[in-house]
Image 1 (cartoon, rainbow, N blue to C red):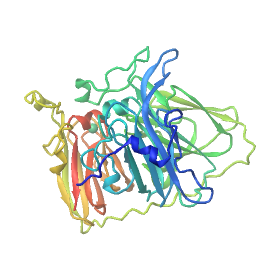
Image 2: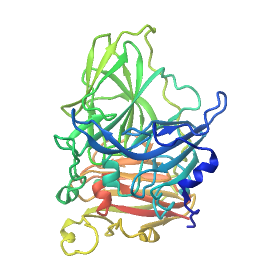
Image 3: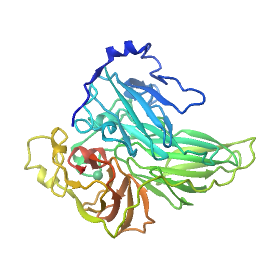
Length: 455
Ligand SMILES: [Cu+2]
């Protein structure tokens, strides 16, 4: 793969961009009133946060906030982000769930060179699918995501969706102590198990927030799990709530039910009928409150449930002609003690552990698919820990599982439960070398990643 020469920040002057720094982000070409233009300038830089009252946390943010600025585009239109690295270390941006060309995928040494301190990179791609997505680095992930480099990317439907109100809720736990100081983002004994959890839970960077919602209205809640480890068991006791989309992709609306397990990287679009003014609901993770949703008086007439969202244009796999490939996700910690060189390897796929320090790993794809071929992947979890399995570049259809009832749906991340075997299928319609990995960052960084080539 040939890379364009890295551009240096000094070159920005010639483009007439001045005053970078304070504020951190703005549209850099402006947004003409009547034209479809989604152009951003996005800076990654250190950012002090007050996560614990009275204490500073030395976070890193996008656009002067953590989680980062909400980027918005419209389905079928072009998103352009001039990304400027003002950190002291290399980084990239990966656009989770967006089906885009490989050069825009943000994986260092696979789709681009790392963006060095002081440099910029222009991300420029069409967003083919509407829905809730997010962005984050694909370099030094446990620390970079851990310090706050995560942000929402919302792709609006081509036509108005029928939701008059919406809120984006980014769920993240912070690895901080009582003084707001960062603790270890990755602890080996946790990495070899469920992953290292942060202690301070938050929504949009605030612990236990109260969110005001308009009484009588149906509000679209875009819940995005930007956490590195935690699977949230989301529930809203006493609420009238319906699921409209999973991981960006619309489903036939159905009640939220008892709970929904949202693994790292996954998204849930929920419609909530906000109760009478003055009512409070608890958004919870299992029994733990994450936020209070408080109903406030609204002058608008009561809203009704919008129709189902239109399907995204994802190719339908033909199971009759599909080739089947098997992937075993294995716990390999017992092997780790005999391997004293290189990074810890606690996990592997089909006997192979990814080495995050080996730039050539992607030259040895675990599978090579034929462009436009139809494939069934059998995903088998050999361990007692869950793995949210994510594929870059293409969406896949979840077919079935030996552990639960599945209504087939398209996604980019499937939460593979303990000892579960599930089948997914897709058309390999995007050429490139695509990462295929667990989104528990500790698992990914200690072996649970592979490359899938489409040629
Ligand atoms: Cu995992």
